[in-house]
Image (cartoon, rainbow, N blue to C red; front, top):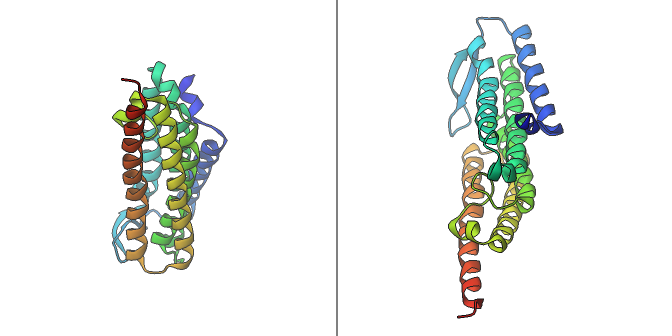
Length: 220
């Protein structure tokens, strides 16, 4: 089935890790345990759910994502060109959900875990993975750097996704390193916003300038 092709080796590993962590959470934590499910800008947990609901949240999010991607892939055609990007996104988000689950269980067990640093590091790895896949994508309306200029020109698509993907990988490296050395949660959250926005804005400008050059090079 096309939908099952979402499950590459990394996706299978992330789903397995999430499943094992979830079962372990139900086994190790008493049913009355309140678990953190949200953290404020200061890095402190500011919302808590009962164990049964909290442990279900990451698997439900991942299952909903799989359903959305699976329904998209059923269309075939142009969506098939987005398969590699969708697989990378699913695997990366699966990894993020598994790590969040493990870290949340550790917090509920009494361990000190800086969740903002953990999430920043995982987002950095996610950006590195997605940035690596972007240059390998083909023009489509579902995954990749999709603009009017990139969709109208295969050359623009390739160049812009290569440029933006490289920029995204650099942002991911910055986030991963920052997560290891920066202790202030607000700085880390600011870096996540900057490393998300900068590649997008740079990609838009690059794609526009590439389209201008292409237009100027066409014979009248």
